[in-house]
Structure formats: C-alpha cells, structure tokens
Length: 538
Ligand code: F6P
Image (cartoon, rainbow, N blue to C red):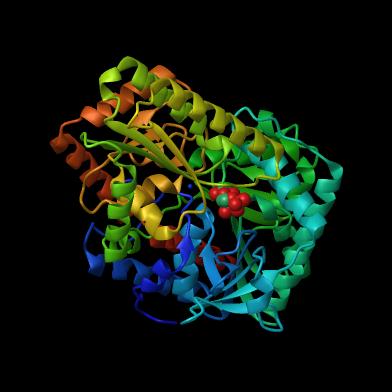
C-alpha cells in the first residue's frame, strides 16, 4: 500500500457529474485526527496517511472489498472510441478517493453500454485505466432484475419511504423478489472476490439491505460494515414497508452499520425495537439479533476537499468558466448568477427553488436582466413515473417563469438538462454568486460541500436547506426551509446583496469546516470503529 497520496490529475479526464449528496469537525469530535486547513497540502497528505495507517491495521491480513449498486466508472461508446464517464452520485464522489487510497476491490452493477467491452474474463477492470489504483468487479443484471431491484424496490419503494418528501412509495412483490435475487448475485460476486482470504466487506446503501445477512450466513468470519447513504425514517413511516422484518434482519447481519447523523441512528434503533425480535442496547448503540451484535454509529460523509480545491484551480476549469460566462452573460448589464447543481430528483426541491426565484423577481423587478438562474441538472431514474412527472412539472414551471419575466435580451431561467462533465460542474460552482441547495430531505448533500471546496477565491454564497445532513455542520450557510417560498425569496435577496466582506468571512469559515472534516476523516473513523470491533472480539 502506498504511504502517500497521489495527486490524481486523471480525475479531470473523466467526465463527471457530481451529485453533489460530512465531515465532522475536530471541534465537535475531539477523537478525530487533526484535520486540514484550506490551501495546506501537507495536512491533506496527513489525513490520507492517517486513513492508510488505520486501514492497514484494520485490514492487516484482510482484503478490503467495497460493494455498491452504482459503479464508480461507466464505459460508453463514442465516435472516438470508448470513454470512461463518472456518474452523478454522492456515493461515488465520497467513496472513490478512499478506494483509490486503500487499493481495494469495488464490486458494483455494470450498467454502462460499453462496460462489457473493457472487462477481463473475471468481469474485472482496473481503474483508472491508465494507472490502475483499484479493481472494479462488475455484476451483470438482466433487464427484469434491474427493473425490479433498482427502479422498483430501491427507487420506487425504499427511496420515497426513507425521504420525507411527500412522494408515496410503491410496493410490489415481484420487485421484492428481484431485490432478493440481485442481493444474492452480489453475494456470489463478493465471495468470489474474497476467495479464501479474510476480508472486510464495506457495503453501500439501500440497494443492498439483504446482502450483510447473506454474507454472514455463508462466511461468519468476514467483517461486514454498511453505510446507509440516505435518511432512515422514523418508525411510524417505516412500518408500512411490507418486508420490514426481512430487511431489518438483513441489515443486522452487519457488524457495523453507519448513518450520516445521530437522528437516523436513533430512528433505526427505534424501528428495530418495535419491528423485530432483537435486543437493543441504547447505551452502547448496539443491537443483538440471535446473539450477534451490530454496532450503529453516525459517520457524516464528506468530500475530498483538497482534490476539489486543486482541480477547481486548474486551467481547464478557468477556460470552462470563461465559456460559461460568455454563454450566459446575456446583456451588457452587470450580471449575477444563481446556480443549482443536482440530479433531477423530487427530493432536491428544484420546483421549490424555482418558485423562490420567481417570487424574488416579482418582488424586485429591478433585478430583471441582472440575475440569471442556471440549473445544471443530471437526468436520473427516468423509468420511474414520479421522476417523469417531476421533469414535466419543471418544464412547465420554467416555461411559465420565463414567459412572465423575460425581456428581449434576457431569459431568467436556463434549465440545463445533461450529464455535465466534471470541469463544467466545477466551473459552474465558480460562476455562482449564489449556490442553491434546497433538498426537501437529504442524508447529507455533497453538492454543498463540493461548492465550498471549489471556492478557493473565498467568494460565493451558499443557500442551504435545513433538511440536509450538511446543514448540521455548515452553519455559516444561509439556511432555508425550501417549502417557505417567501423565506426563500428573502434569503436569495440577502445573498445577492450581502456585503462582500460578510460573504468572504462566511465562506472562510465554511471552508475551514469542510477542510477539517474531509472524506478521509470519514473513512478513518469507520475503519477505526472496525478496528475497535476486532479488538473487542479478541
Ligand atoms: O446518495 C444516495 C444515492 O442513492 C446513492 O446511492 C446514489 O449513488 C446516488 O444517490 C445517485 O443515485 P443513482 O445511483 O440511483 O443514480
């Protein structure tokens, strides 16, 4: 294992749409290693080294196998050959630097059109292709499996069930059966990668809720940890899930189960207490099912602060920024830009954000021609009806706002629906006078942290929904309730008219928080916990 982190310029060669879904500060968590400070490369290297040391202790005789539905790289066919594309995913943004650092194996669904062209006989491909730092093992799914397990049970049932965004979950037995079958498929692939070795298996998210129990049944010696990247609902919301007992039993196959915030851990323990035969130890946040303990802990996820800062300062991003300025500065008048960056998802509060902007223009007609709203929006899960409906509603609202406010020279809203590449996303952050994150409910929301990491110029204001995990840390953002349109319009006006000194001070404090609680601290804390579990078992 390397002892020093490599600067990965190759990230800029990948096309990426950052979904932009916390780190914790040393102030809040005195057990953390010292964090970095903005612009200080030595502290960035130190935080990677700390992770590496903890991982090598935790995994001294073990492999590290990470498992997720979404793969870190999708291969696509283009006129110029096969291209590697980074998907829009908070999970990928957060986890990729860690898997690179530990040189692990990543097992994931091979969903790209050219994925099969680049794998070897064992369905493996090195990533990144020029200088592989880890192995990606692809799992193939039939259309029926993908439909039932991914679109159905994961995103039409568990996703709305877990997010309080007032979209009703849809339950269908066939989807559940596909979910079980696909979890078995992942189990086979993981065991194949583990072979005879000892291993730590680190599972991601709600797509793979049955996998921990399946693995534990077949290989009790494995250390199994899982991170649930979305909120865990309160027990009243969860009790309508028809396969509650099976899912909870699946998750209790884990040795360690992580959520973003303490509140989600509390919800999980309450759900288990009422929903399944198990002993809940509230004092140590542990559940015993059939004698096996599962430790439940909050690990707020974050981003690779120094990498994003470095990439944002690159000349390619500066060029892209100039292009965006030229494209969207529609009038010779002084322009300000309000920016949104998301997957198109009903949890992100895109309609609410647009309504806030609309009200701002109604109340302040003097802003017309001076403020443009740009939403960089990645299409997502469009096979699910709720997502198709959302897209239609967004189109109608954008059309309506533009119709009512536009002038001959100026269109107020540009809804840029595309898989924007990584440099475009970073340039969009740099372009933003105001970045709006208005999720109705979000486990973390890494867009907020990416934005902060990208602003080494210390400019730009962040408007952030109170209902994101990130809001618990990013206290110098302008916090909003996205359902309160009047409040949103007020906050927008405040952000646009804020004195520069105030804006800079807020951004400096935000950057300090994200730099200190970067993704390596997240990984370090998880592996430290795994180490403690090992010690406890000795
Ligand atoms: O952050 C939650 C999450 O579901 C991740 O698991 C996922 O990678 C991301 O949102 C994007 O969703 P999807 O993988 O369905 O495109």
